[in-house]
Amino acid sequence: MRSRRQLAALDQHQLDDLGISAKAAQAEANRPIWDVPAHWVK
Image (cartoon, rainbow, N blue to C red):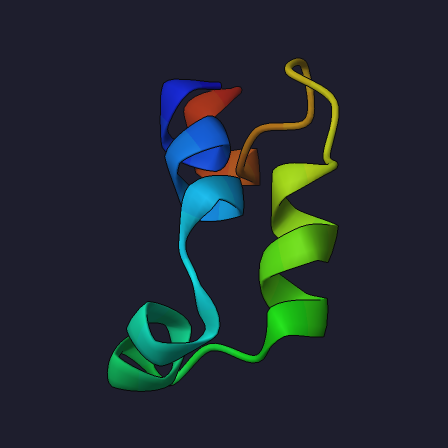
């Protein structure tokens, strides 16, 4: 959750440096807290 909040706070220049589109960053930031990668659930 903390990483997603930080991702949402990045400006366009920072997202460009990371190679992430604003749309992709927003989609990731809006994922619910229980939506984790499959390899975490094993």
